Image 1 (cartoon, rainbow, N blue to C red):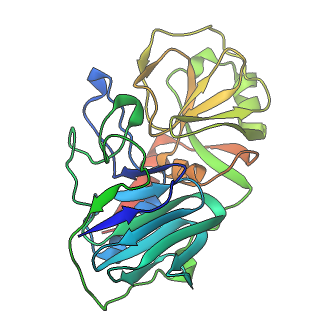
Image 2 (tube, helix red, strand yellow; image 1 turned 135 degrees about the vertical axis):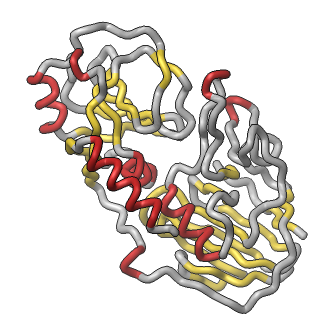
Amino acid sequence: MSLEVINSPIFVTIQDKGRFSYAHIGVTASGVMDEYAYYIANMLLGNSYNENILEIAFSNFQLKANSNTQIAVTGAICEVFINEKPYSSWQTINIKAGDIIKIGKILSGSKVYLGVKEGFKIQKEFGSYSTTIKENLGGLNANRLLKGDILPINEKLTYHKARLKECYIPKYEDTLDLRVILSYQDEFFNKEQIDKFFSSEFTITNEFNRMGCKLSGESIKCNINGIISEGISFGAIQITNDGQPIILLKDRQTIGGYPKIGSVLSIDCFKLAQAKPNTKIRFKLIDIKEAQKKLKEFYNSFN
């Protein structure tokens, strides 16, 4: 009872919500880059909201079903084929033993999520299924998926189907507005530099992965050269010595010594996860109370 990887995918990992409470020993949180797509996939399948899922970062990924199951494909808009027959994403698809599942071209966005009914039957490490390659933890053999890998699943034959309403399917754009809460280190940036940060347009560079996203644009000057290394939150915006911002994401290091001008609202980081190099970024100020309200609305919407 399994799904079998039958080609050589470029970068596919098993993820869940993440691995928490271990930063003090240097273990990063990891987890899915786009939580919206992740929660929707599990909701469509009737899974728990912390069930594991495949995060697919590049086109052309193929699986063979060795038993009956149900899948849901969400995230980036992509070609989905079952036995070469096209299907839409953002819905459940019933799968029978022997079926070939293919994720073809990614048409819009950059991260595809493939969930399976009741998840993959693998062991958790440090309380999570999430793959963190640099720490040799989680997933299947603590690595990206390789040709020939076997993903154990439960046998499920169901005729029930679910589809997300069109109005809730995201549109991935070439320009993003990211809301930012100012850091307690904003005192190290004078008003002119903060105003420049919020009035400038930045561009996503090719230095963009699960650890972080480096931007290019106006140089932001800090009044200090660095700080004593300290813990880093999801979405933290470090200003490096060259004045360019780096937004820290799910596989970020646990500590760092660059000053932080602020932090991107976490639910906006999910939009950022679907962006590509050369996407334009503008930052918008949001206060802490409004940010907390938006977070509560987001997570409550799945209840």
